[in-house]
Image 1 (tube, rainbow, N blue to C red):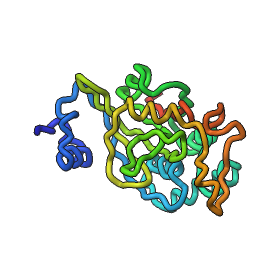
Image 2: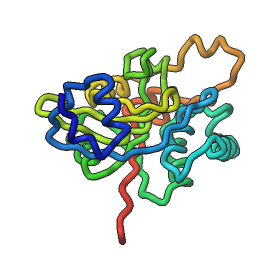
Image 3: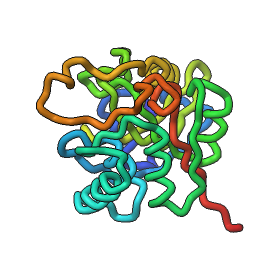
Length: 222
């Protein structure tokens, strides 16, 4: 299979070759930004996803973000269950324009945003293989969306997250469906001897995660 279109993106090319991703062998449009991966320690997926956007990120970068988020009252141990809090933390650490998106991700607006070079921080339910699934928010996880690959049949996105340093390629539709059903905090997590900072109206409320994403706009010369 020919993945010559990806040769300028070595990490993406390796994944295409390794897993023989025939579904993206002949894309119509591609926009992709390589980022350095970081493995999370504890419930820090949102902080790790944000750290990947910063210059030369390290574990110390994540520790700094954790301290900042704790001081602001956004988190206890690194968990980020409020997209609005994630928005404010991101704004405080990036010079880019940063906005909160409300709505389904599988839309022309999202496709155009990614094709124009935008990046996104997106909450979703994470399956055992780290791909999007639907557990009503019980497996809520943050990922950094680093690009888009449009084919004649489907639209795919590229992502990085704190459970793997490898790039992931997912269906935009599946990510959208996962993001849209983040309704409740996992009952299993309530049994653990760990405190979590939760929005008063829950994951599915206005301050939660459902149908929300953080847009990081490309820097402009103006």
